[in-house]
Amino acid sequence: MKGYIEIKKEICKECHLCISVCNRDCIVPSTEYNLKGYHPVSFNDNGKCNGCSLCAIICPEVAIEVYRD
Ligand code: SF4
Ligand code: SF4
Image 1 (cartoon, rainbow, N blue to C red):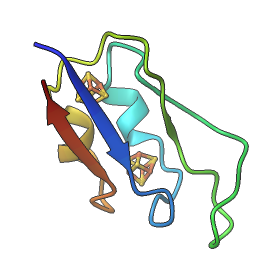
Image 2: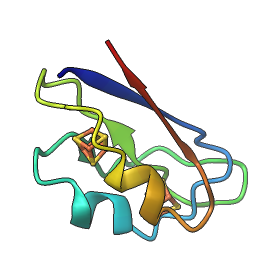
Image 3: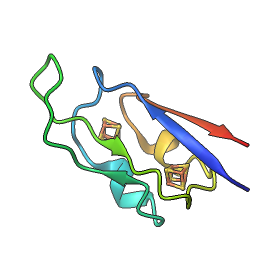
Image 4: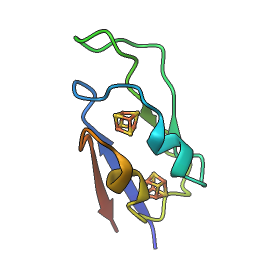
């Protein structure tokens, strides 16, 4: 199964829990800033996301939405 995610960058608080659970390297840190001064994470569209939703489940800010093809 293939998937992709959308990250609501304005509510991301840069905790990187999502990065720690994604074993497919689909989420990466960024150097951009959101309005609260955090560096929101980015989706790395490497074709490996399977829509497992682990990132969305662990995100304390509910900043990730998962889609499956
Ligand atoms: S849905 Fe799964 S594979 Fe896709 S970014 Fe989230 S944790 Fe990684
Ligand atoms: S788990 Fe949520 S708040 Fe934490 S870095 Fe990932 S998207 Fe941002």
